[in-house]
Image (cartoon, rainbow, N blue to C red):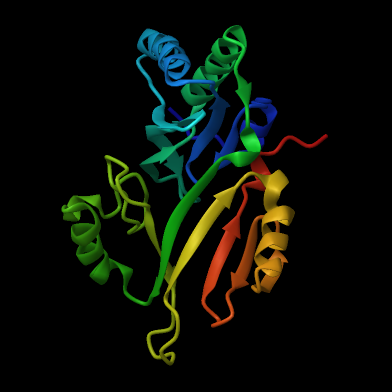
Length: 235
């Protein structure tokens, strides 16, 4: 099944969901554990009907869901096809059904609170070092390039954050090479940046904001705040 582009996801009008990194994310507020279990039982039945299910995380007062397909088809400019992890039509369809189930059970969505974290490592030789990090993070070198046409390391069981590799000059002087990517809903980007600045951080580069904003702490360590603005429906 073909992967969906940002504009296609935006047109789907999934008000409860936000596109972060590779998947669709939603948070529903619950009063107690029993309510969460009953909600997930209904979501499970909906998933069984189509042979596709969300990733689930339970927290105090909320249920977090992520929808992503591990067999999405990506085509590069040359027409070469890759099987990747990404949002497809089946994710959009199931997201709509989950939204209906939540409404039937009187659950409120909290889309602005969803978040996803990835790690970035700048290197001139990702193909050489990726197997080491795949083995360290997941225990298997097979995690290199899984669900991606690049050397990105992804754990099938989602125990650890994805690790992707950015380009770096092989001869540049030593500097920070690891950084954290934090994905948030588009509507909270300004608030999150303001919170970082209020805590003593600085904005290093906002030329691509709100999609990408580079921030730094007082020691100069950098992190990147990310939001997929392409998947937000224009009013």
